Image (cartoon, rainbow, N blue to C red; front, side, top):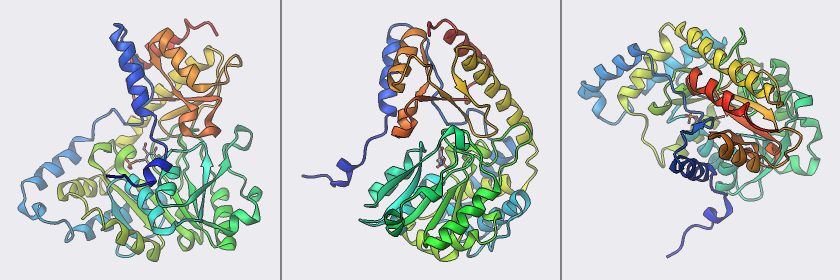
Length: 386
Ligand SMILES: Cc1ncc(COP(=O)(O)O)c(C=O)c1O
């Protein structure tokens, strides 16, 4: 019996190795602190949970979930109008997703094929490269550098690569670098995509985790964006709802239609009570996010100040759940650094190499732990001899 050759071609995620390393440290009696997770630790607001509880008791929502999907689309359209000043037709320009992850996997299957290239910023959330490979395509990496504010240089892509390119993946606010993109960059992207006949998929997963007054825009806020692509968004980070698996793809109607056709192969829509929770989340007062983001801001500052105090170079990010720091001069191998730090202090800080070779030389630390745990992690790091 054989497995698909696809499985050999795609590298497995590193996270099971991290788990093993942390378990081994715990087995020595050390209480570890992991700064790895992008999984929000704060609970979903109670009114949203209550809406789902009520729906759970209604037999309407025990059937296949097609009939009320229209209301989900309308709720997304209303959120996009209020939050991003973007108008969407709920019937043709919005599709529900089981988290943005479903969109990442299926958009690759929708537009990629053997011989085709997807442009991927590097370092990046690892799913873009994996989805591209699973769909038989090749990745062409666009380096993100601190001196360019972690924005790619679209002019540097050679003509022969552009001729084979089908898709450009973007993600701002960016995981792992924490960088944000100005609207002028999205304008440049629309122009680039039009000229080269390339789809754009902008992943806006961190649009509503931001600090210091920063408000992330939608890619679709730029004129012409809907004609070249889609945006993925999710309730996971914005609404503390990662476990509910609620997301959306919005934008180009034909691309969304094709995406729905691919998705229908593996999924029959979102559980009704979850959809009701999403409608509640998207259409009611969201001012609670300000306090949540202020809590995240304090955590971010603990990490930024703590890592700077031990000599790591980093910018103070205005969005996302992460800080992205340059290794101290004595180190060049990020995995060796992470292992050494875990061994010395019991703190796991994610190696930049997990986000592709372009992440080498960096580490990523996450703010999804209570402030006291982050402070303790930083105190332990101060004991390192760097
Ligand atoms: C950039 C990015 N996109 C997508 C996802 C997946 O999010 P979702 O829960 O919406 O599937 C993550 C999760 O960490 C992410 O970091």
